[in-house]
Length: 195
Image (tube, rainbow, N blue to C red; front, side, top):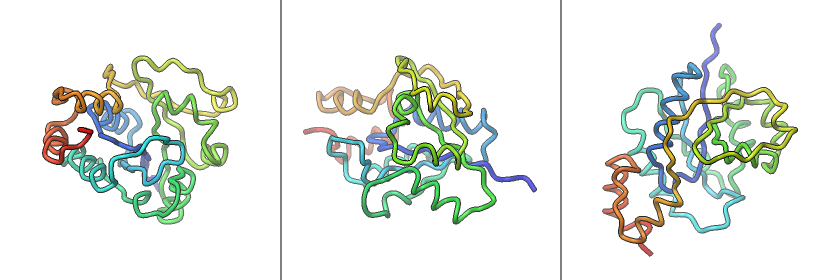
């Protein structure tokens, strides 16, 4: 019996941008995934800054995904109370869908900090690690993490960061070339990142 292969693609997605979209599509192809499951974080326990309300981040992810095949949004962390911990999410999915192979899709910046995640050793026993390197991320992972089996996903050369997008919008700059058109319209219509 062939297992389904599903990537867990989590983040604050504040906002989701073209590099997120490119990574999700590239990973689906490169890793022969049945699905990439986008998971907006509810309350990321490592984020110090205040985030845009969850309903806006969820709406923007839906717009970024559009009708792309194999791209799905999950509200699992938005519906869970307390801090969003990836290990809890993986355990919940494994309980609900036992015939699935889980792939944890992360960026190079997250890879460098993976050893600080709650329960990271157990997490890497439950999910295959796939790391996407984007321009400018050269931080080496902790040696204990590096020894774990993982795949590197070649990410299209898109040097885009949500932090930069928020700063540009706050300055009144356009971000149409950095986010999907529907997301740019949503940011504008809802006056996000202005203050």
